[in-house]
Each structure stands twice: as C-alpha cells, then as structure tokens.
Length: 188
Image (cartoon, rainbow, N blue to C red; front, side, top):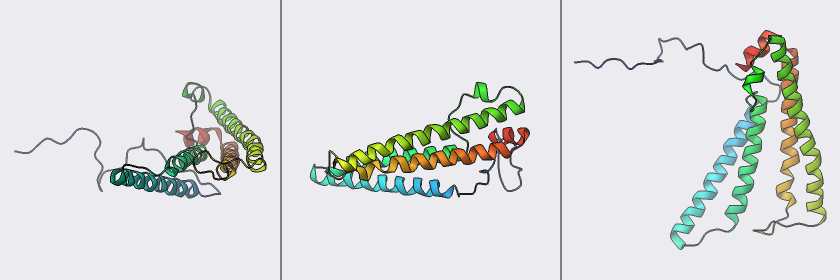
C-alpha cells in the first residue's frame, strides 16, 4: 500500500520553481557580501564568547566578567550591520498599506522618499554620534566592566551609520533610475 503524496508545493529537479519566490538581490556597486560576512563573523564571535562563558561557569561556578560587555557591544553592532543589509536590499520596515497602494509612479516616489528619509536619519545619527566619540576620547571615559576606553566601542556608531546612510543613497539612486513598473517589481 502506498501513501498518498503530501499536499503543497514539491520541488525537485524536474519541478519548475514557483513564481512567488523572492527575486535575487539587486545588483549594487558595493557588494552585499560585506554585510553578510560581517554578520557571520559577529555571530561566530558571539557564539564563541557565550560558549566559553558557559563552559567556564559550568566547570568553576564563576563566569568571565568581560563576556557581558563584549556581548552587548557585538549585539548592537550586529543589529546595525543587519540594518545596513536590510536597507541595501530594500527590506527595511515600512507601512505596506501606504507603499503598496496607488499608481506605479506613486509607489516609485514613496520608495524614493523612504530611501531619502533613511539616508537623512542615519547621516544625522552619524554626525551627532561623532560628538559622543569625541567626548569619550577627550574625557578619557572607560567602560564600566573592563575599564577599556569607551571610544573603542562608540567609534563604530558613526562608521556603521554612515554605511547605512550610503546604502540608502544607493537605494535612492537605484529607485530613481528604475521605471515605475520595475521599481515596484523590485520591491515585490
């Protein structure tokens, strides 16, 4: 007795791919592999640090004090790098009710406006955070856990925010060059 085939789409070598699969990444000048590899490296560091802390805590009933400080820094950096990848791939948060309604030209203009606003926000954060980095350096602030110079951590905020802003500018340029029909197809 044979079992009935499972319901739903089945993919094998002979089956065509469904049409609703998301398209590959749009071509960009600066490779998206930068964010992808940075994400992999940061996640690997987080896993190693956490594993080492768990192992030491299990064997000695004590933990490394520095792991929490590094873990928090790496998680914040991971969120920023992932945000950069989301902006570059046009997968950032938006209100679909507004961006998917109306004519193709309206959707294109909203995509351009969204990219421009993201760029403006992150360039503003980068500029304002430079003052924080300078104050950390000038006043010789140290981290609370290990006593490391605080600017070692805070310097990454303006760097990554500038990267996100540049990715948003690239997205704005790509949306500006696209015809209204292809701009909405790239978002789908």
